[in-house]
Length: 197
Ligand code: GRF
Image (cartoon, rainbow, N blue to C red; front, top):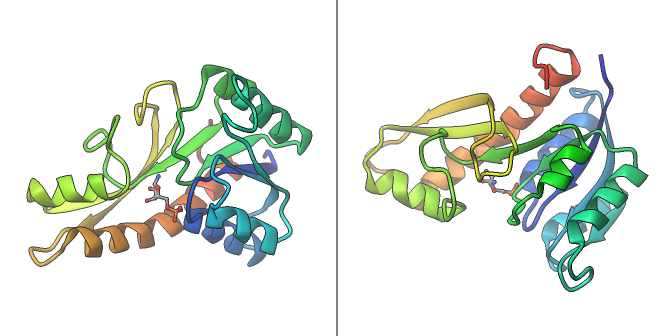
């Protein structure tokens, strides 16, 4: 069993990150919360990290022109991170970053990949497309990150029904709710060896 040393990359709200933090604090998941990095100075995720006394940093192309991923790796390694959690991180991830953690970089996507993934498929765009296509199920996917958007190996998925009365907003809300449990479930399975990455 490998003790998870988690480092988070988050650009906005960080509710998935907070759900994982809460589950670690509640003893459901045995992991260290090592560091949080955002590209966005006003990300609520940074506030949340500071409220939890987790070291938090802003790294972007203004703070580190040309080498922001290098700086991200440096910080995460400084805090002994062995598993990188993308939690609403809106920037592409370089091969350098992925290789620096032996591919242990996870992402959560608010749909059932491979459907509704790829460039431009983020946030409300995803739910809008699902509603427009009159899908009867949607859900969330946890996958390993590779260099292509939303194309890495799938580790887990959870489905929900899309009801005729669902709107983009109600669907987004329902999916986010299941995301919060799914991320921790996968991390528990990684930590006890049920999922090997
Ligand atoms: C989630 O819907 C996740 O699937 C996507 O970005 C959103 C992040 O939400 N990758 P939050 O910042 O964790 O609240």
